Length: 282
Image 1 (cartoon, rainbow, N blue to C red):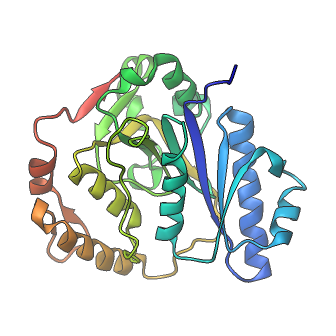
Image 2 (image 1 turned 45 degrees about the horizontal axis):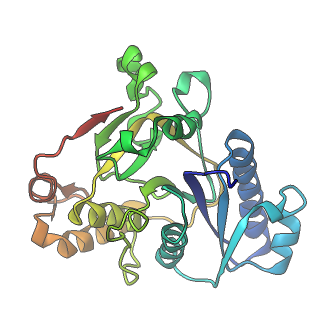
């Protein structure tokens, strides 16, 4: 009898040219793989972009590569690796796909509420309990600090999983329902969107397609302090990307705020969310 595995983890690992940077990124990836393999029983698919044979051999010194499902990709933009990751997931039998960058885990101390326990608890509850939750992502402590939301009402967050409407999705980690398995249209970003904000693009595309995107307030993202794919002028890049997205979703009421890189979501929510609940408690 085949063991049912409702969750699958899909990790994008792009290896830039340059031996020193490759080693740093490979070492971070080994840490991430070890975390997911020891903290959970979730099977892992590794999207390897611009990898060389030596990368596999050296990674195998600390990680059993044979336990991974490897999908090899050429050197290509992040958006194409994201699409490859999503397509691999939609073609699987998993109910949920955890989409990851190669530097992402969860804070898992007792003060951080659920950590990796969330996924086992969701399996125990069954997917039907999460009706109305289509895409979700963890708290980003860089945005809201290390005084987690769940500290405001300990009894609530001790006994429940809480999801709050938001498109402030960070591509380092987010979870997607398998729409294809459920006979629904899948969500994929535009492969021609090569600007900063591909993660926001995915969230906007999901909501404008009629799906929910929510922050799970029981888990907190932890990113390893490795080499970023993005250089300087991050806010400038964000404004360029978010302005393009405002044009792409103008028909849904999305606007860019004057003199800012932030988006005005008021009309977008009104047009795309309707009367659905903005908070779901399981």
